[in-house]
Image (cartoon, rainbow, N blue to C red; front, side, top):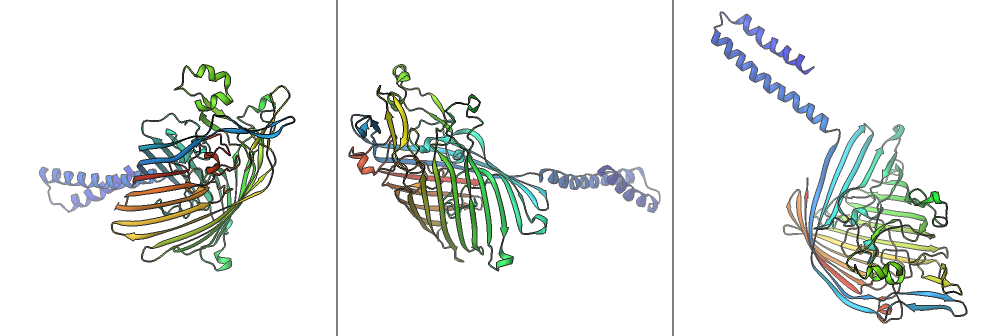
Length: 527
């Protein structure tokens, strides 16, 4: 087609000149041919550019690259393992697994990380499109993909891959399609790996637009599922009002877990289902009110994932390997963890508000609630919000593991912040608090110490964003954590007072920090 157009243009350019010219000389003809060749080259380039652009527009790539230097410091870090045992005739007793609490400080003065996010968009039809994002997040000089299991933040699993430094792999953080205006209505459908990270109001500290659908105070967790939404504004007259029903699966209990052996390893497992509503109550571009309500059904005692088994825990839980391990203290064996049982259900709800003023001033607040509903069952690390109790038979062998109780436990969290225009950028202050049983799904938040919004206690952050240009900025700040209870970010196990663990009155199978702070500088470039 393109060649036909060029030939036709050549005829149209040459013939009139031949008819009107008196008796062209050889030089005249050569000049005309040279001029025509130049014009044809220019026309060819003009035709080629749209063709190339149309081909590339089938998938539009964009992204950002962030390099960070952190200085991380833990104060009064305590390791005091112990379990509850039920001996015949003795009842339930606390049994320490060490000589006493081991307390120390830990300083990682310089930690470098790189995060690459590669986004994709493609138009499928007038009312249908695809969106995706690949993420790499790594420590400098580390691509092992697994970490030594010293906290729940070190547990690499499906829901937290995007926020865990897991190496130089590009992982699929999100991949979904949107089918809008179905049948000319205000309904839409979206299926795939959900945009469930960096939701409001956490996007302000990230210096980006709304990155995820649900409240970032309650959910920052990757999952696969379906969203059915409806734009209500035409019916209610309320600007930007949208209601969404979301469903997803957080854990597959059979395929991949050796279920074909049909034994007791998977007998007590069920698929974990997530479902609920996410409602944009009001959104006019400046004022935003959001409600999130959902339920996690059949939650298990730790989703399947991988970690490097700690040498410090071998003596208690892998005594056979422990003897040989003394000759290789610098080596850890990698574990693919499979949970053992369903431990209960979790209900969650949040109401958030944010306001962006005309002068650039931003202020927001969010109040959230979580409810743990244990079923009385437990795995090695505990039941839902309760301790595990090991029952021994007459020969001293473990007969069963059960939960200490099955009481429903309520938790709440508060999150507030401001962001003000400042020379060369903006300045922000944030504060959040979580109660004893506060258990949000924010484990994929990529704070190095751990999700600050999952803190059972107090966390405060101050930062300054320097705008280098429209596509680059530098964020300098610090986060301070004041933990009051153990187990932040996990529904497994009973939250114990940090002071009680330090005093030897309570135990924790994993190290517990009293306070921690992280000073950082993050340079982000968008492309």
